[in-house]
Length: 225
Image 1 (cartoon, rainbow, N blue to C red):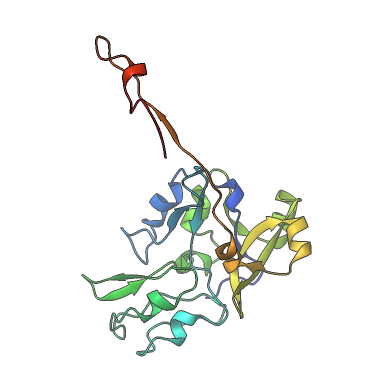
Image 2: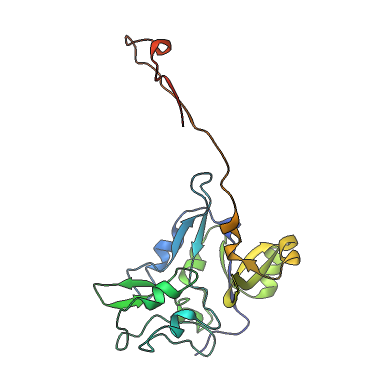
């Protein structure tokens, strides 16, 4: 069976609370039981605890499949990009390097590439992926476009991403603020590379233990980095 056309996968990074429920649920998927195919990444760990789940985006023209010399990665008729087929995969790692979203993982002990396949055993019969069934904040949502419009009136789903001169369209949608989506038709992934780091200073104050030399007489009491 195929995934119903009216059901889509949506990611809302703003709603991720870093609980890791999706990681645990992903290990229960029948196609890769025991392994989690979701990455939970920090947006900017030096400044925030904000996390974002990273799943396979299921590109309409998957680069991972295009660079596979063994033709081991297949895209189903409904647009879901599958993990490498064991009889064909030669564990070369081309797909790992080529994926613009950094999704595929090469398991050297088994000599195969594995990744999120949108719980195809479930979504092909209209069920939600395991991760979307347990996400308490609905940062991962599987449903219709009408449902997500009602749940997120201030956001809109985007599935077009710009990497330099290359535009990639995906089956998975990312929720972005509606005002930003109206200003730009796609998400420019590499735009952040041009941002300059902000200057900052870290002041460290050393507190003396009882009975030790007073802090004021210690030349290293206050260190500024």
